[in-house]
Image 1 (cartoon, rainbow, N blue to C red):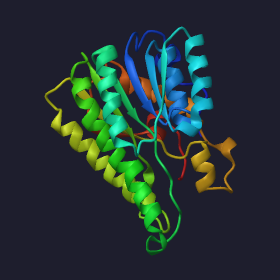
Image 2 (cartoon, rainbow, N blue to C red):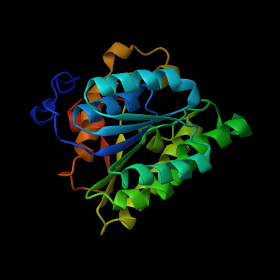
Image 3 (tube, rainbow, N blue to C red):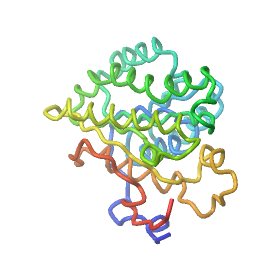
Image 4 (cartoon, helix red, strand yellow):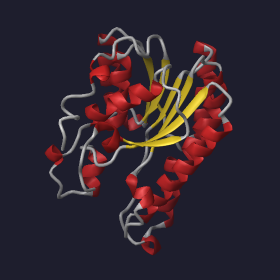
Length: 260
């Protein structure tokens, strides 16, 4: 691993003000990458709408405390992303309160069972599709009008290298991430003449609880952390970042050499 993870690019050491007074919606915000992104966005000046499942209420409240300690506002939203009507209501509530949305980070996902495709139970397949694909489509429907009301709307989706590896037993998760990438890049193409930029981040192996579940024998100390990848999200969310319709691999961006 290069020194890039422990010594970020100079332009990213000082985050203050890059997202000043921007409104950012982050899903899966109670832990892992989502939590790190929410905190780093707040450090950069953004106010946060933090979404996670109701059973993560305690973690959301801790995040709220941390963000308010940074001098920014946090609105916590305990919400199961399979409650699609609630996503629509959230869009309406954002419009009523702020009149716009500047940044969407669609980070929440479920790993599902690692097993042969033919062995996946229908209920698990349905959950994978509901959480990893359909909820993100519903977020697009609910937030696209709000992002267009921003002076620089930014949508960031989180994919996985599994989408392209055709690896045995990873089919359920991989299929959803491949579909998510296509959906996000189509969304980008549909907004190529609007003020919305849409990009996808492929994190690679990151020391998160999902990674530990997927690869239990791996030493997490050998991996970058969620805090290491968060500055990439800040860069893509910046008003000054104008590229759209791309899949950015964190390991390439950070200059990390690793076979994964």
